[in-house]
Image (cartoon, rainbow, N blue to C red; front, side, top):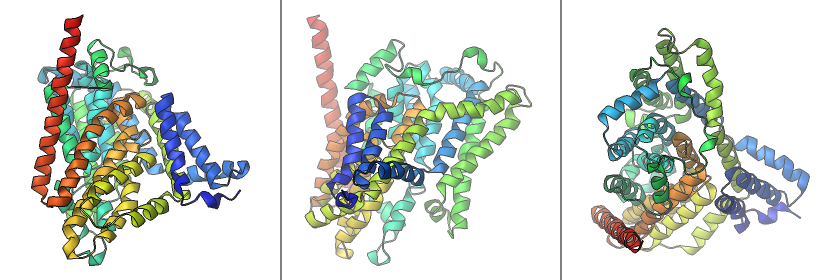
Length: 510
């Protein structure tokens, strides 16, 4: 059998879909991803076992992003050092005196997630490591913490013009489009309904204390002291007697500050090295991965001089933290490697060509294109586990669909819909790298995070579909955004009232 018969066909979607279905059914992500990659390798080689075996590992090696793995391990070491020094415990005690309620703890987490807008990987792991002791103190479930982290990572980065994601849009705009890449990025921000409405929903959920679906059960269990509900045994906890008693809040705050400042500085520097002439273009053209590795290494060096002279940790304990940090990140690293391999299999099977062919032959310039592109982007990002790959496939197609100055506004709306749908699909995909990192940052069971967040994301996604239909008709950003936000708030308020009435009735019946 010739593997070429499967390339560029609907079969290219089979491996990621198989992995996703198995993950949701079995609640076990490692074997599901492995089976998905293995099936993809068999398709690619025409079901020739030895060739498939060789292709499996060739694709895995070529798909891995070593920079991200190094960053994960180094950040894991930083998290361990913060805990060993007593800095995390000291921050938790200090925050307990300043943060008086569960709502305040979640608002503080949301605020920190919004502030760290430079890179979503950096955001996911940093916010989790800093705020986890605080949210644990106020009995916020790990699934809820992972949701807040994830909902303020990619959605914030995708609307921040000085984030690493701005470069993706900049690079896809042709010179004759009548608008620069950065101008396009600024114009699509108010039309990026999923990102903006997700942030609005987080604030609504946090302030009102309203939860529904599986998340409600996790929060009820957390109130009784069970922060995990399930899967908590996979995370290695530090015993109290292993922590330093001399830890201070600054032992946590200073390394985080060094991490953020050095990451931003390195991104600006690498952007200028690449030929940028100002800070904005430096950010959009920076080498984000190298900058993050530099920042983590500099932070570890800073922690060495911060902790050792005061003897809050021994040199041996400091060096042991590298291995312990590696152990802490093993679940995230394993899932990332398989997820990247699954994307590599999709690329080898021509998933991009298949989608481009389907989209190119079945769409035309009409008011429904933004909504259609939003749905396609969700499906593609969900299947591949990457919003970046979805941008690369769909944004050039959308730009080509709306040529000329007369179609500029529709092109802006449609590109916004692609970016929004990509982030939405990335959010609900169990094989997404940012979803994996949010689980790791919160130390939440990955399937618990995916299953709870999927229900919340679905509410926003449905509202966004309506919003993009409205945008296609009226093409006025502030009206589109205002109407979409009003619909979301009405839907959430109705859901809250319905569920509260149902709960009251259940109590009275008992």
